[in-house]
Amino acid sequence: MATLRPFRAVRPRPEYVEEIASPPYDVVSTDEARAQAEGNPRSFLHVARPEIDLASGTDLYDESVYEQGAVNLRQFVEEDDTVQDEEPALYVYRLVMEGREQTGIFGNVSVQEYDDGTIVKHEKTRPAKENDRTRHILAQRAHAEPVMLTYRDQEAADHIIEQAQERAPLYDFEADDGVRHTLWKVGPTDRLVEAFRTLDHLYIADGHHRCKAASRAAAQLRSDASDSDASFEFFPAVLFPMSNMDIMA
Image (cartoon, rainbow, N blue to C red; front, top):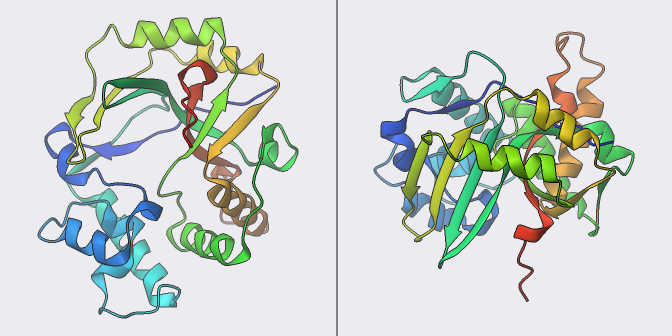
């Protein structure tokens, strides 16, 4: 049984979404991230790659990098550029690249289900990258980016995804790399949560190190009495049905 959990997203106001949107942290170098974010204080790269706000040559694993990321995230949350949803929600996310569509669900998944194998792995992880992402999570008390999971097609989930796309999207824009991003909020979330409970497994498509880091961070935070809401027991994912997946060389 797979768990899909709604959450109260902190997200861009529509007029700022193109300035805030950024590529994943691990597909750009520090120099590339610094160049892309230059002159754009709203870019989420300031959160995902906070070394760009420190002196050139700063060790990527220096404590100051993680501290800067925490400062940048707090500022991101507090600024008028963003809004937090009043109620926990789930989202339908579509991206179109070179004419090919891929549409899935944005929500939270369970650390426990990663640990017990309900979320299935297919790669080993490297300690250095585990350590980096774990420190990033613990410093920010947040997961800056989602992982990508896939699941066996589920008819009820497909229907809900189709229904969500009949409404006006929250965002619809084309990024500088030519990929078009569209996001809708799902109506009542109960049916989608129930649909996922019929799935035996979810499968990691990308983000093995972030999944492992979520597990390690949760293990550490369980002993911290101040985290009484246990939100660290979940981490964000975009989940695509297998029929949408295109496995490239």
